[in-house]
Image (cartoon, rainbow, N blue to C red):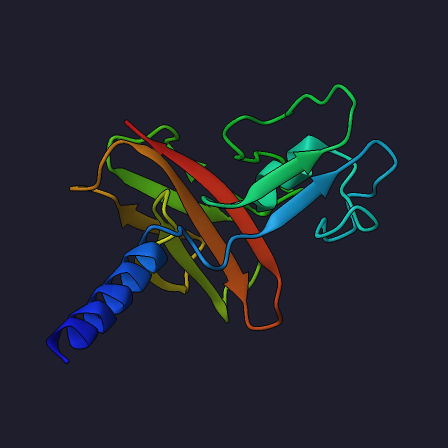
Length: 165
């Protein structure tokens, strides 16, 4: 009886260990092909993006980007956009040593929120955007790449990438 109970405990322990080592359960896969369309969602070959940059802009840590045979070149390695027509939000300084500013060119900030995620997708800080400029700190966080997610209550979403030195 003791050996059956011990065997059951070991089986459960091995199962839990395998789950912990399995990696993120909610990773996404994005597809890119020359005949795709960047207005698609990229979640299948049928709905593939056309540009590698679009896939890089939407992917977060743990996601996969699959590309069809072709030559692709990212156009924006840090994922930061300075063209207000593309994205009304800017981060500066980028790279940062800890303190940075999130600026918006929108007339109204009501309903907009931000969240800062580490490379593993964990939310480090979040808040409401109520002014044209919001000052945010990553003091005490490791150097590396962080994702700044900005969204409103209508589902509009922007992703910026911030490098901390």
